[in-house]
Image (cartoon, rainbow, N blue to C red):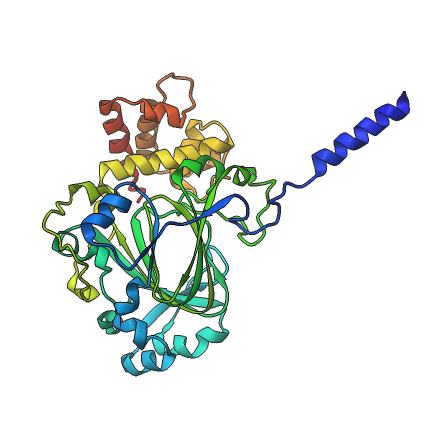
Length: 393
């Protein structure tokens, strides 16, 4: 009898210690499907009706081959020939790290000399001397967009060899156009948010090791369905607002992306937009930064809801943890956090407390995303008003 008991215990121990199939595999390993594809840029109205408003990603093959940069950026010699004589400082971040890694700043010409042997890549607003090479994507080529208040910014990504992004989501709609090289995109619908823990609330990203994911720490990834695509020079991809994504880049690699304000999509009157795509140089469009998005009540409320949802995955959100969401860089900074509370500005603490009390509808001193979902219009305004005091964005 004793031998049978020992046998059972041994077997149970072995099963409990067995690693999940995805353990130490790259992010994106598992159930997946290819992203939807079209050829070239779609006309503006079609693009917004079929992809932007439904919040649906799409790959646009060969779309940016009409850009002057598609031909001009094939070699570094071109960049050296158009760079200004006076220093033009660009930022370089780590190719395989997190946004917490300190950024280097160098002259663009120095970057060209060192990037092939550097562990860093350039991530910078598209330099003015290259604007003539970059066109507004044809699917955004309408005056109500390019001359309106919806475009937020554009950025150039320039590196060599293998680099990886963190797992993250953007608080804006995004078209990324690859001019040279290869990029692999792994993306996830927002419906899988509860299964992908983004542990850095200040930047909506995860510190997971993307090439060797610890499936014990991130067990939810076995429950999601990934979408994948591989971009080559000339291809663009639309990544909708709040879709989680991770990017791997290979060899010499140059891309430009454009962000626009998700909350203004439904305000656009696209009836007079051209039925054929039109591309204009990027400096002909108006870009407004992130200020409008960050101050809109809808954006503030939804971002707050996201923070609460991610924190709630770990443990119930009490008032100290609620304050930590807005005053700490990590969800790990929890309990009891009395020292942290003492260091928070009294006005901010008071505002966050009022917001907490408005959400805590059952008065059990802990709040949930479900409570936020059920708030009245008046209580929603109260929460947003007090969160804005923090100037979180």
